[in-house]
Image 1: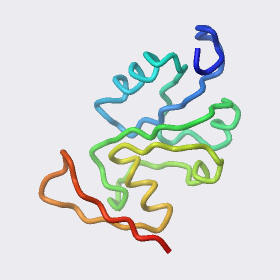
Image 2: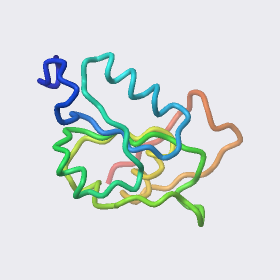
Image 3: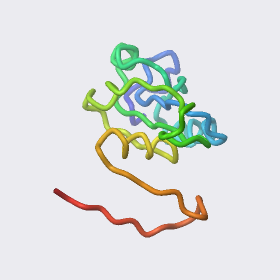
Length: 122
């Protein structure tokens, strides 16, 4: 068992999925569990303090249909990015990471599929 829980689902999750309204949140959870990694889905606005208490070792921020620049963008605790945990952002989650670390992006005509990206290093 990768996370050391030996199949004990009452154990602390190794990975938290912060849900930003993705239609694939439960699929992500299932795929992670198929890898024998205990995961738990929590709302996007889960506090950094709650994440610390969970003793999770990593985060996935799942997608959603919104833009981080929208007036009604889902709320989140920006302190999650200073916890020192690995974070995978999918869709809206990637927008959050990009925004928090000073990046920017533009909406394109198509929003799915493969894309070429450019990464500028400082």
